[in-house]
Amino acid sequence: MLDKNLIEIVKKHPNKTAIAYNESRISYQELYANINNLSENLRTIGIAQGDCIALILPNSPEFAIAFYATAKLNAIILPINPLLKEEELSYYIIDSNASAIITNSYGAGISRKIISKIDKNIELIILDDTSLFTRQVDNSTITESTSNFTGDVLYQYSSGSTGRPKRVCRTQNNLYHEVKNFTETTNISPVDNILCIVPLYHAHGLGNCLLAAIHNGATLVILEPVLHQGKTIEIPFIFRCSRILELIEKEKITILPAVPYIFNTLAETPDDTLVDVSTLRLCFCAGNFLSKEIFDKFLQRFGIPVRQLYGCTEAGSVAINLDEDIENTYDSVGYPLKNIDIKIIDDAGKELPTGSIGEIVMILKLNCSTLTLIKM
Image (tube, rainbow, N blue to C red; front, top):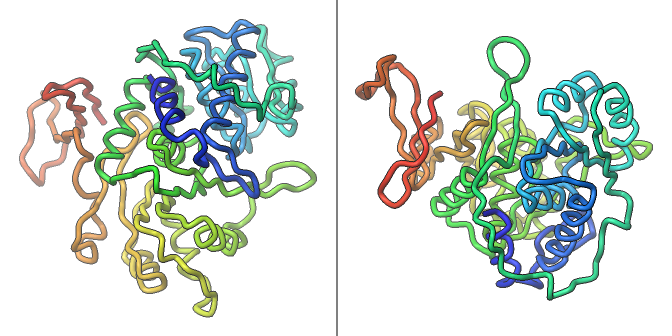
């Protein structure tokens, strides 16, 4: 299902930039050639439908390529924070019963340590090996996809109130309709440029950056990570502000997904820092509550309202506030995305009236019928 959508986009926009990363530009045709190449390599080493592949990668074109190459085989993707320690990474690898790890040279060492301590054959694919990648485009490889596979494609972990994070499984059908509903609600199109500054291993980055861009033939602009002695490191976000503002202007960014902390830090840039943000049409946050202080600060600094999005690991994006009177409803997550219903029910499953406290139920509507029901 994801592969079929990708091929349709590649055929429509072969020479359009799919991913911009630092000074690199990857067209949709080049992106698909690399996905196809890696997918064939994975098939050669025995990866098949239902196998789990862990991605221990920073935000990068390699992440996008590995994601779609795995989905092409109807295998299951497990994106993991590459900054985690060995014990944490090992937990996810074991719990998911991963058959392979895809990483880069910086994650190869810790991946080998993990594999050596697990009583199972786990393949290690290092994407810095240029033999896996190609810039050559063979148009004959871009053929109609006959796969209508809608099954399991993604494992993500949700931190519960007790114990270790719990594994959540999502299907190709689920991801496809999430991005379709988000697209119809926010009107994303090929003319959009989406800036990715949130982690792609997280539901927010994966759904609202990677999938939102590729599904629509838009351009995904990825903020490159900071490297120290060849290794990805975390630094205070304040030191990335100038680069982000530079990217917004240079790449003519139209959509900026982020979290409240990022919007607050951007809003605190000095007034004498001149930047053209006139192309921005949609800024939205998820992952935490947007305070009135941050909303006002960003609006005053850049003249653009930050809109709240509600979602969860289990269902992805669910609702967004696109209210025209946003200054009076800034603290609302708005209405459900198109094709989604939300209800509040009691313990017996009975729908409750407005203002009541109960369980949140999200219902995906397809062709006037209900397909998926998720309780929260």
